Image (spheres, rainbow, N blue to C red):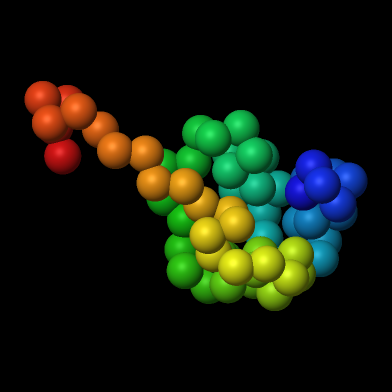
Length: 64
């Protein structure tokens, strides 16, 4: 989004996703996201899933 200078509101309109969902993603507060939402984001932003998501491993003692 930042690279394309899109606002959350503009991306919400383009994807049909809820603004609160997108805001949580932008601020890295989302705890889950549905696969169709990821697919829609990739379609609109013309990118791959790996461009959107990054795996962060937890410590073994932190729980599953």
